[in-house]
Length: 155
Image (cartoon, rainbow, N blue to C red; front, side, top):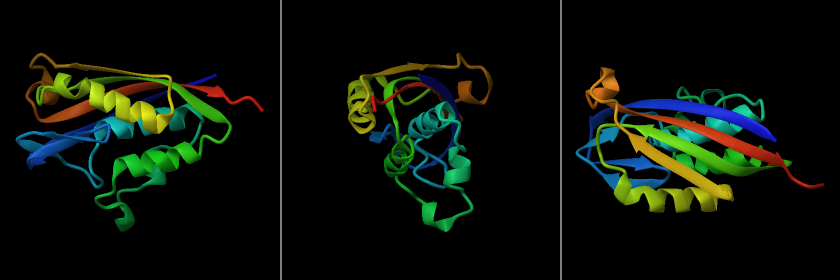
């Protein structure tokens, strides 16, 4: 078995929606990033890559490469999953830290989407606020923290 941890942050910018785990959520702002800024999917990718001892998404999909401009993070996740070779994702446990939007109405859609894409037995998703502390507490962005468990596939 292998365990990895991923963490990602994105600040807000002008816009009208955010994407979390491949699901579009209406909001009065968007997340700023070179790709679609899906902070949750980015943290999942880094957790999987970390479990395998592989380079992080910044090395695999650099923001200096124009081919990744506006990229769909779910498609990038599918590329990461190709690198798992003899390992299978069993579980990802995710925590989002954000003041808004409220994630609870979208939790089951996000977890089911990720469960299907990852082929995982379970996807845990919690959302919390920063209780007014720091940039996250002021609603300036979103943080995702993810732990992934992978197991060796039977030969």
